[in-house]
Image (cartoon, rainbow, N blue to C red; front, side, top):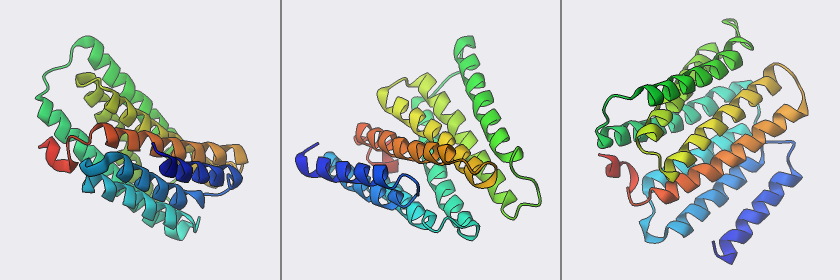
Length: 225
């Protein structure tokens, strides 16, 4: 990272530290991440990856309102991102021409599925019920994110590369961010939960952009076909 891109990232981290009580940093941080990815990629950048980062920017802008009326649009944008990442994962698994899992790896995948499913269940059914206005959105959101987590676990079993480790960390941070976001706004108004949600969001951007940089040789979605 050269001095210019490092300076922008440091300034945005400073904004996070000074404004840690709100989500207003997300749009600023996403723009810095987009610039960092574009600069570090050189001529090998992917328009598809840039589009995903731009969607994060849109989600961050919408999240500025912190309103339940806007929450449905935030969830729709995030679900779109998760679905596109899931498509990349499935295409990559297809490219590997995977075979049946052995007992150890099957146990690992099942354990990951139980872990993701438990977190999704607790964060959704423990907090919400059918009377909640966006209940169907919440259920759909949890399903898409849960399937993404299971898919990434399967991909890592067949391709244990550093890029896929970053992708696993990204999905884990998504879970942390969303769970504590839900707990803070709809269960317990405790600032520590808000900070954990923000921290999970920041780390997810870092891990995702490193995944993108390590897979730039597969330019966009075409590299997985």
